[in-house]
Length: 197
Image (cartoon, rainbow, N blue to C red; front, side, top):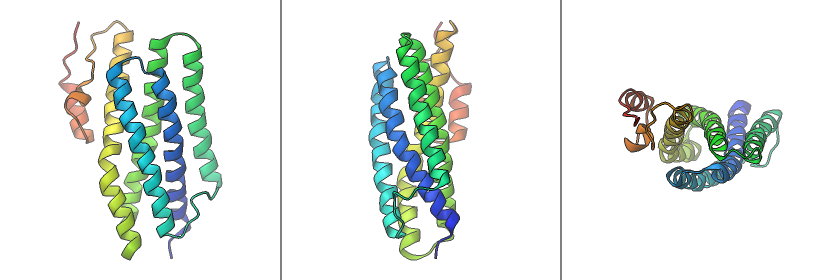
């Protein structure tokens, strides 16, 4: 018997990934740089796979993946607000500013994704049998992708802001060039950045 709180985490994670599909769809409309657009297109495809993985985990746990809770409603509202923010930025007519807003929105979304998968990985240790295997298999496949989504987009966001401020920027960001997948690697990449004047 799984705990109600684990079920809540599972459902919120799934709802957040569904929202992530919408976030990336909106972000792609804001992306001006072809390299950033290509990266977000890849992340959109991966996020669609994450929705499928979490839906499959729900089935293993015999949880209706469309269950609505107060928590899932909040997660859905947060995702909707990120999409609305990007649409508003795009409508304002400043493509460079909209691209920065999109990067910020992706960072916000990926911060929760990163936490969700970290928690799912930890929680799986207390499970057994097929349930444990289902969560751990998904975690092992997806955790590195979530790390990349978060740390790379943080780099993009920082460097796009630097460029907009007229400060030396390194684009694509060092996190991208060094393909970082951990917080330590991201910090090192940031420290070793080589902006162009």
